[in-house]
Length: 586
Image 1 (cartoon, rainbow, N blue to C red):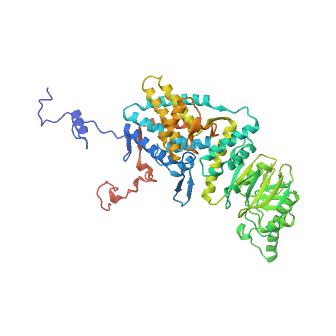
Image 2: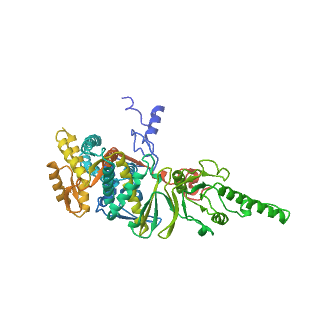
Image 3: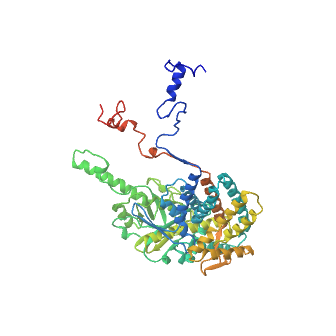
């Protein structure tokens, strides 16, 4: 009351005076307002809540729409032209996702699951992206209606658990097969993997080659012992599988043509030594008093290289391979003594030869007569392949290895063939470790969808609708395979639903006759591990994107060196001593 009847001109008490000053800070708009709290630095863009979640789902849809048409045996290819001018033609999901250079942080999750599927299984990279996109598409209406994302995530995790259990129950185990039956099973699975690729017209030819390669490798070794070389020219049918190591003839000097080009049971020495004369001025500065002293320097250098060459010949080696250059003197020296040499051999090829022939790579020529230094192989031969000369090492006693030599008309075509073979090889290796298969062509997705729909009817509450939505999402695979083959997806799905309702669990899309068929009997087989991994990865990615409700982005921090030089703004633009004015400053 006393405060209300004060003289308005009387001075305020100190505490009230301070409060008034604080209340009237710039931008406060009046007494009593709270001061504005600034948490994030200037220029930071934050978006949160439901609109952010919807935006992330839309971004993922845009990525999915790019690879959608590549699914299945009749899928289309994409031509990607990057800033370096290189052209890639592919319909491999992982390759496309990698080449697209997606920058959206949420959509980048789809790229990562595609890459993980490629590394883990090798096949099913397009399927996993499609499934994740469809799980998000089905969740979108629930998000818009106000269902909490955590409720959707819980339902999806329950659905994937039920689906995985059913998948393991449906899988056909091929553990107790004879070697002939196992081989036939692997060839059919490899043919299914190649069916959706650019090389599908030659799928049986390549399936046989892939199975030969996988069976010849030691299961414990990685794929680094499986090489592939590309030679432009000829047709795909001219491609071959070499049981051993093969690499392109390296750069060679005069005297190379006189060398022996075929050996049986040769001894092989591998070096990391340069066998050529170097000009003195490149190595050192030598001051000499007379010409005789200069001649001694030159002679010493010749003696050093002749000493190296003599030691190599004395070791009993027939083939000399070096990572560094072998000059014209050494080439002629070896040719005169009936040896074969190749310099500047690529590091990967040299390592393969070392493992396959049990040779040790040497960095000097002094201990070549020691045991276990030299390697051997059954036969060595240099042959012409297309327009290139190739060195073949066959019948190697060490680690089993093999090399694909791929032929074809265009470089992009051969590269796509190589990617297709990689997918088939990975799939076949997985199948060899886990010999369990399911029917492809969308059959397993339809069966899991029917199972989850039935299961959801016994669940109470929102979970029933969400598991039903998950079941509907699984139908995207047969729907897209049918659409990409030019069929009516609605008609095909209705037929498949009817078949699966009557217990025909292996009915899928028949792209050959444009209808539906028992894909297990049609030998459209897929590895169970591939489908299990795809379901788990797609669900996990969808749950991850659904759990994000805020994105914080600071454009200022994205500019290089912006924060490193705070005082570099210049005095003329307000960076002067008092921060005022736009003049030149003092």
